[in-house]
Length: 267
Image (cartoon, rainbow, N blue to C red; front, side, top):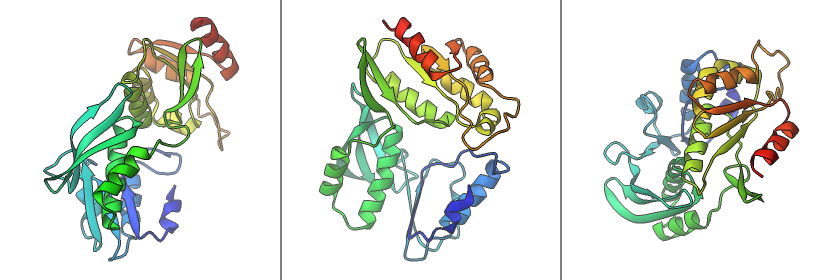
């Protein structure tokens, strides 16, 4: 919601602006307006780091009196960019770090997924602003192993690798499954519990498309969180959307039932 407008930031980092929390916001334009207000809170001696690939990025940056650094994968339109991105056998990325067209050397990440390239570029922009040297930046990113519930390795069951991820928005799911497809595997099983009725209803088509990008899909009942009104939506609707894309999909009401189902299928 708009709680971030109560902050007093000296640095603001904006990685993406997408449709979410539509139980509070009217639409994507309302969300974009809130982010514009957020970056406007940064004082003249502060810093705004923003993903230069965001649609109409100038909407957020025009008129700002503070320093603005755009990051992304296009070396021509961004101040700090990633070139020659490569992915290893465990979905970890490396890239050439470009600062206004100047190559500062190779960055190697120990976290998985191309979305972490953008995360690292934002961290790099902040570090450079603080006067941290390139060698220290490279070392820090190499040693960073990630956080819990972000493509977190949990162990193995019957020689099946188990990964936990908190992705609960279609864009996050897309990034997670792209990472999973670049991770060692034969078949990909996805178990997903939708989070809130309002998000599921407003982004139903997007959920179906994102979740279908797997070999096998299980959807359990929606986690209501703060909500009590089902809005006439259910996890069966999500499965139906995903089935349109030809995925092998199942609706299984409870997580314990899904666990038993997987024990049989993956034995």
